[in-house]
Amino acid sequence: MSEVENRLTLAGYQKSKGNVWIKGNKKIQVVHSKEWNRDCARVTWKDKWEDYQAIIYDCTSTNCPAYVVPTQTLFNSDFVSKKRKQRSYANSGYWWTQKFPIDHELPRLIIKYGNRWDIIQKY
Image (cartoon, rainbow, N blue to C red):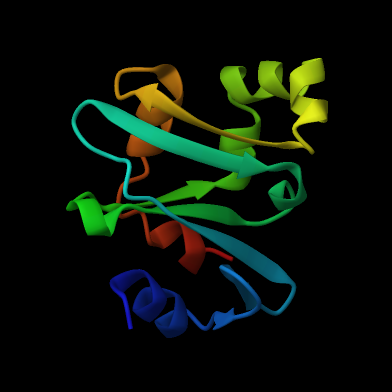
């Protein structure tokens, strides 16, 4: 069991289908990424995750921490808010994945939530 799976299990979450974890009516999405390093980061989100409690970017395979980001923080960010209004976003099926320079506003936002396991404990 990975560190992320272990922490979610200890917090009372159970794995559902795919990488969705559920505790009562609370949901968390885990996004595994091998594209996080000191130069770049891949960030993925889907509109169907908007009502989830958090998105965990599990980059532990690249020796980075797991980033436990409150979903509303991500969806209310300037970049994501603007992207969701674009026609290309609708054409993508209401999801987006992109590799960003590590100093871009979106990876910087996510990095602030490194190892913030207290976020899932609040719910």
